[in-house]
Amino acid sequence: MLKKVFLCVLYFALLAPLTSVVAEEEEGQQAPDYQYFALSPDIITNYIKPGKRLGYVRLRVDLMVKSSTAYEQVEMNAPLIRDRIITIFGEQNESQIKSNSERDAIRQRCLTEVNDVLFEFIGTRPVENLLFTKYLEQ
Image (cartoon, rainbow, N blue to C red; front, side, top):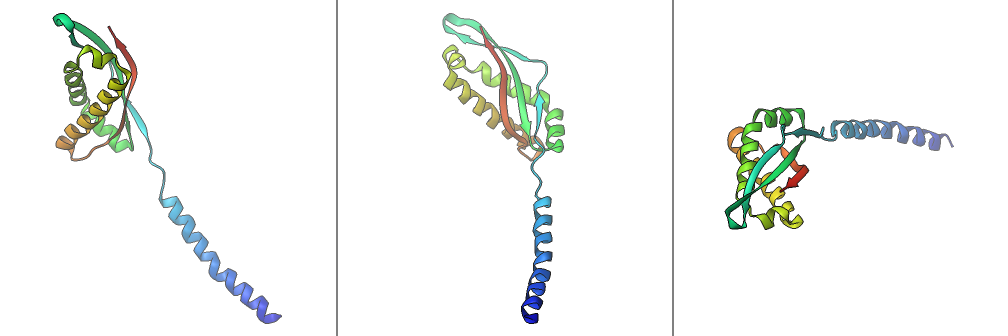
């Protein structure tokens, strides 16, 4: 009987430090601190309509980043990001601008190209997602 009690105490004594190691590892793996950077003011640019007329699109763009460092990098390069998005929209035609499926393709292209241009300047791709929170076309 005494031997069983001793083995139980020894078992729990050896198990207790392992649970604290596991808890420390879980604390060390914190969730990313997602933040949103809004390009301000809204982007207003034109696109090509049939008959060589111009159409206009107004966008509010939010960029999702993982950390405050990435937020600062995006904030510093906001004019570059804005220029890239305006360039992409200027290349689109009316059917692409008005189609929901094409709108998502444009959003994906903007995300890819924004990260590519930021990689050229800062060496990282800080933008996790790009959202059009306002999208008006005329």
